[in-house]
Image 1: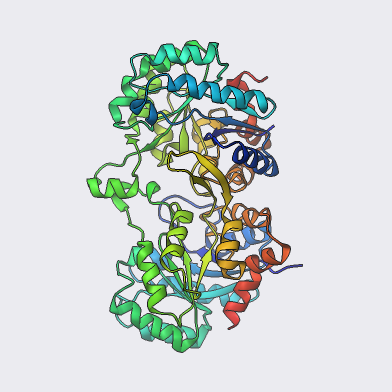
Image 2: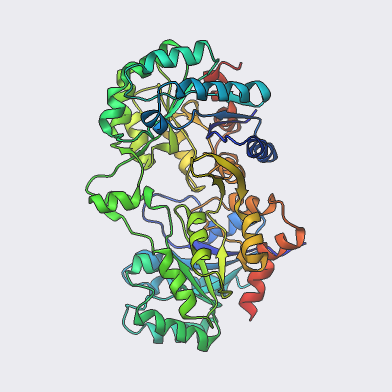
Length: 260
Length: 272
């Protein structure tokens, strides 16, 4: 069973069908479709959360064999925890994320939403967090050129995991500069990573297994911006044991999504 | 059986982490594993060592040892004294099949005098010029060694400025987006080729951010520029070669197009 833990929503139905066929051709059985980016919530009314949940619910119903839905809420929204609870209990969402794309997002955003993350722990759902961490010493110009996305220090990975020990946190894109990110996460067993959204670099998955163990690594693609075929190759061709490969490709996801 | 020729393999040493398949023996084992018969090769030492020529020496040596597997390209750093003499000696002695430029690491503009000289030499020698705008995604670069990629608009300008040169373009971060810009800025040019490593999908969007369709880069490029201008490349052993190969093999294009992209185009280009 191959489960992709990191797929962005595609609103157009025809395009969504196309994406499913591409996933199937790459041997992927299930897609975790993340909630729509929350940036709209700051521009529109809060009922957008329900709108997005309703759209996702329809997708989950239509493709019940192959789609698992996540919700998304505004991290700094004071009503975020109640929106999350409603999304899970009323709409059947099995996770939260991808957090971290909000406008005005910064370091405090992630540290400030530990109540939301703890709520996810109470609800026994995983949280996917966008996590290209920043590097020390970059000028604002370089920072913009290199990242142009919300970024945070690698230390935040450890800090947020420490504050929310009962929540499974899946930091996306192996944290950016994975060597730092893995070390930051290492002491906290609830801090995990997905393999999505970067070129198929050799040795990264192997390093994750070596430092963290395969139980803390999830296959993700970042489709539709990335190719399923090239992204899944990162795990399929990694020099790791069959057990580790099976865990990363689907076993871990089955566990945290309650699919066993 | 079709020829699979990787236009962008790398020997030499990678400074940021230990690569299991580093060096020519590692690359050969990856080629065997991935079903790649031949590889155009340069050395990472030409990117990172003070004297880029050290890398070319290594490539010359391995190409001599394995002429049936490796096709040598020569890296040129046109800011380096005597680069022209080095290039010509290398071509004469080792018959390099192409020139490769790393303007991001070697810090020069493609619009400068140095590149005009390189292009002139390449025309005289009848060699294609590979421009690597970036060797790996800038977002992974450690803070102590951030190297800005060569702007794609500079590449577009060079393509237009040197219409008689054959130019191969390869990149890293969000390369497909860069390629789309390149095509937009050099729509009439037919003298450039796109190397496929790092390509993926893109989502065609409406203004609101809603995805209208999902596009496979290989299928789209085969339509947009023609399969004859796509060259299969891997950047192995930095990237997993099977990832890039599968991307081409599993694309919904004709078997003739796949054959062209995986090797035939490169074979024709290097023979020309």
